[in-house]
Length: 323
Image 1 (spheres, rainbow, N blue to C red):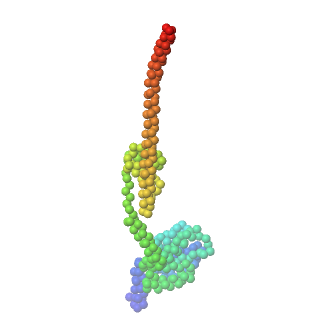
Image 2 (cartoon, one colour):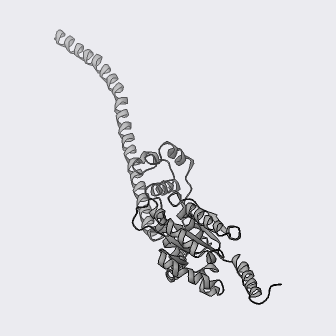
Image 3 (cartoon, helix red, strand yellow):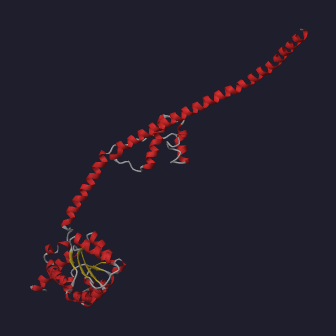
């Protein structure tokens, strides 16, 4: 039966096992030229790392598993999702886990002397680590300091709060306050916007719209408006406004109403002018027709005058003969 320190050590191990399920993942990442350094780091601190749930990019995580197997702890270590290699999206996958509050800390051995095709993903990962305020080590020196905190955090989880609860950068509260103001402003604007009631367009206007929604329903073609009643003309003005302005904003409502009123007035004026022109043409046609009707009467009169002139002329000749 275990006695003394052995009993105490077993109790501590049980406590670690219970808290192990609650802890968020520790992500281990290393660029190619930094993988040997990561291998050495894991070997030196396997006694601490074995208590954490480990995730990471593809080749780095395979290296870590090989070390755990060598030290006989591979089966006792819990692993998180196996991500792709960095250039294939692995860093982006770690960043996604960060955004879903599944990562408590990151040890990332970056290679500062090589170009990386996925540098945008690396920057995104670092930025999100700052946003969510998790433990972050980007070189071997900071990783050595961080491992001491992780070891102490096994017995005092207040030292590694990001593994147990969601944190955030102090800048996040300011950002959220600004976003709330924007949303409240938009909601307030929507509430105070007047409702626009558009008039229905007649069947005749619909037929014109099917032929040509721009030209046929326009005050540029007043002949299409003859015979249309007031609400139909008003409907045409609404269509024109919709064609030239896709969105009517609240602050432009008064200006838009003025434009519509002017368009309706111009439409009525043009329609009235066209009607007058047609009436004048009709009157001129009637006058011309009257003149045409008078010509046969004139011809008849001329035809009657000719025999009369001849008769009178004959009478005159016979009178002179008698004398």
